Image 1 (spheres, rainbow over the protein chains, first blue to last red):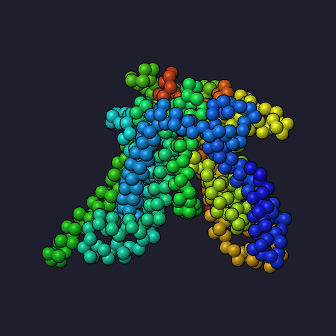
Image 2 (cartoon, one colour):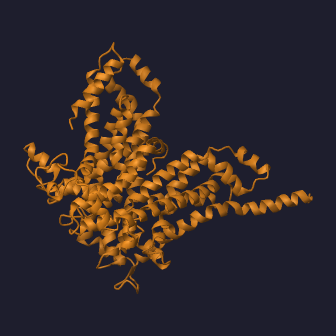
Image 3 (tube, each protein chain N blue to C red):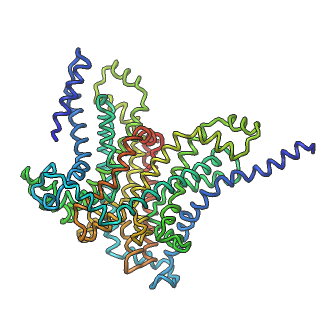
Length: 292
Length: 300
């Protein structure tokens, strides 16, 4: 993993692009710094992925080997068979998909009302929504848990799905986007006799696809990686999500690290795939909103 | 003017007046039930003491006076402040440097951005697990590399000050890509003709950075500082699996204190709720301060 090779090749290509002017020292330094930094950023993930194919004895070896000497796919088969990995994975998928669908539905409806209707209490509702972006879940952990428990949703997937669904950032982002939709368009549909919900569903939502995509992507990443809330709610193994299962197993030293590593890699794979596919939407989403 | 059509209009209008409330209802129901109401009731619980978790006795401000003289709690406050200041300073500096460099990098720029952003999307639990393994004394790859360079084998997770550096470092690794993207967006909104004009006036790259880029980047930097402060205060997951708050509580932050008192025995609801209220006041206060200072300096 040499840092100089990619930098050199990029400067070589650089010079072939503009033959008249060779790359300045500053450009070479910049490319080298950026490439070196990028290697440092990615290295731990690559390292974990490579090591997840090592046998336990090779993992314990010092100094460690870079590439696995032989590929121990057994780490993966063992992790998949000796734990209810499929169950945790399925739980994570259910929670992520259902919570994201719910978030999109209720956030977009609320955002539409806040953006396109005049009604008493609108500004108050919007301000309250905004101010709670500041309230982290940790502060209200205990009282939320009590509400959820009193509704019989503790230790259930519903308790993982519903409480975090009404994200204030989602409402805010969608509202800002909907403000840019011309009122005339909605008025025209109204004159054509369309009902209020039809207007929302058929006219407004299709125009909001970029904003909806951003909210959906972030919601999926949040829910998939969510830890503190599921740690509280998921007491039984049957409702563990992947992060909860991983944290619990790694804290019990009985689970060998090669299996923890294999499960870790499997659990981050879906997010990496989504990221690589949707990279552009994610970056423009951040640029527009500072949303996290 | 009570023609049939206007009466129909009025009836339709009356029905329409309900429509916006129906639209906001589902969101506000979930929101009220699981955010607003708990926030109010959390404040309420902080005024009560409960020895068994069922019956509550009103104690006024006792939880607050107790917690503010609790040395264990005060240590978590100090740890949190050290962590947040270290994290915000380092992550803002790194993100600014990266954004300035990336903004000029044409070739491979997309791939580089993706590489810097990648840790942002990785499960924090996995982040903590992997870094714990990499920082282990003896077999951890970081120490093996340091040893190879003749720098010895620092006990990252064994010595209090090194453990603090470790969680700050991992926090920066996780978040720097996110803040870099915000700053990049800020850089790209700067009018390029300003640079053309500066070049004509004979300004070099450093002068351009100092006179044009940094002043115009201030609003984005203020956003970054505010968001980084909130992110720093809320850090929990990766610390939980990286150090578990150790060694000897050196990396136990305020959030972990709240979690442990609320959910791990001995359970102290009143204390946990008071800690939650204090946490909110601190985060809110620091954020407001950031905002006001930034505003006075003309950043917004």
